[in-house]
Length: 200
Image 1 (cartoon, rainbow, N blue to C red):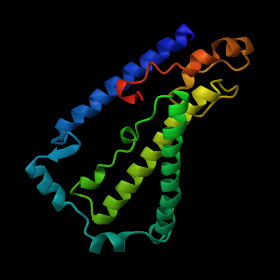
Image 2 (spheres, helix red, strand yellow; image 1 turned 90 degrees about the horizontal axis):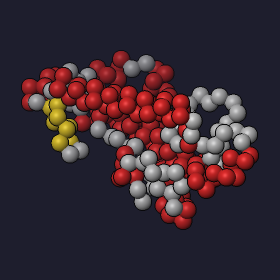
Image 3 (cartoon, rainbow, N blue to C red; image 1 turned 90 degrees about the vertical axis):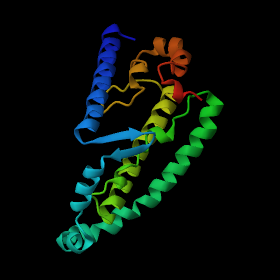
Image 4 (cartoon, rainbow, N blue to C red; image 1 turned 60 degrees about the vertical axis):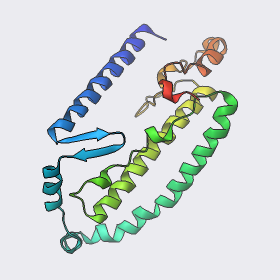
């Protein structure tokens, strides 16, 4: 890989780590701690949160007509999402084992915790579960697709992408026929950079 690209990727990883540390500092700012998978607020903060809930008797009348009319369409999208989730999970369980591709840990991508916030009413909690699931699912599917692409077609595109997935930097250059034939197997197996808990 080009040394300048490698240096930029290393800088990105360093910035991502700094960002995670800054986000973790917010735990103290908002008086919560994470113990295992549970988020714990101080008692006084929980009481304050409960006092800020918009009761349904206030929330529904203030909702716009468009919100109420489009809600069923939004929730209908859960049906194809569940099918996608099942399909991708089965796909990687079978194919990744066969080809020796490290499997993606679904639990790292699907984070559903906002429904525990005491200042949300029941509708807001359901919406937060939906958004957490849906966005986590998309990230999970993208990572499965990225690893699949790294194995089957690790060639960069000629045209600029709106966003690059996590494996793209390892891909071979567009138009480098000799490099493709020489390094395809090497790139197909270049998963050593993954975290230990991502291993099969």
